[in-house]
Length: 117
Image 1 (cartoon, rainbow, N blue to C red):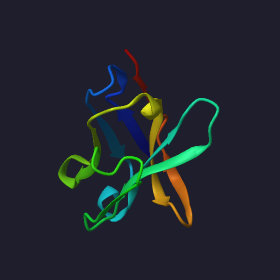
Image 2 (image 1 turned 60 degrees about the vertical axis):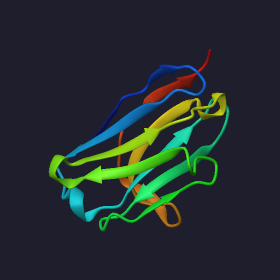
Image 3 (image 1 turned 135 degrees about the horizontal axis):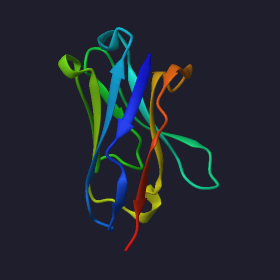
Image 4 (image 1 turned 180 degrees about the horizontal axis):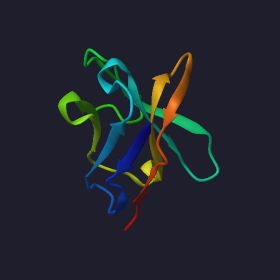
């Protein structure tokens, strides 16, 4: 079982990135997938979720700038990030589960996003 994130990097404020979360080893289409992030010195922050039916939710801090989507044929969830700000700098991870009940059992290793001029 694997969740593998990719697409992170260094970007200037106002720029864009698209993160990918590729799944293998489980019935991907049956699971809700979350993007979460951890900034240096801060706790885990929920960013966005998409359920098995394609319904989405986004944190207020990213609403209007980030968009979560999924392609079940490719076993992949995406996070399109636009108008990036320095406060978006964090390690971004994908995980199954629910932001209210708890994340897991499947987690990725994370991909670093750094927003800096």
